[in-house]
Length: 356
Image (tube, rainbow, N blue to C red; front, top):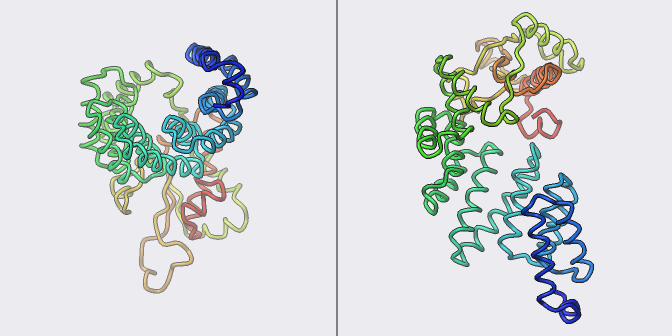
């Protein structure tokens, strides 16, 4: 806290102003919270609580780039403040969308916070960092490592529904469907209206061909949080095939040349064989897959392999999109993504090209 501010205004005055900021934040008046925090910082530029409130208010207002800089300022002043570390990591992991670099940065903050919480013997904060770490690792596709963090989180807070749900998601992504089903059913025993548990149980039922159960679960999740689970954008078979043909026609010339003797097919969902053919397994929610040997790796030794093919998964694509236009666009992106694998590009290469 700035000494001159404390002398002029008194510690009680600063605390009263912080309380007012906290009240505005809790009431959801983030503009007022931001204004109050900035007023405090005008008098005490290095007041950690005010820096924290300013950054958090910017997050809630959707001003994420400014929030990132604000958290950087807060951590510069208070690098070992667990609350600030957790909020900064949460902003990067949970608010950054598909930005893998941001999630990786958030995971680094989680690791630092976890070490500090362990050193301080702060079990509650240790749990929070482990849970957030598990969420971030799931986003990065590192689901086996996520399970380690989530199991550790549950070791500290065994009844945590958040950790149980995230653990179920990791199991699902690892194609351990029976274990995932048991995990989500356990969640519903304590929280019958958990939408994510219903959604994932719907996905599991869909994979085993139980359409009635899948629809019941999907409808339940949608009724609970319609903004998270909108109805899938469905295309008739002929219309979907047309969209795939259009996507192929619009490929750059240098990409089209690789498609000679490559079959492009559409299936409802990925098979276990496709998913488990790699280690770690592919996500059951993948939008497409390339089967075969990339062009640069072909030789006379594998000349007798089955012809290369690209498969698009219609149900996953329809569930991924929010609008018909978005679905058509995503079909094109997925075709280009799989052509990239045909050309020998890996996931990092495709991500750098915006084709992840």
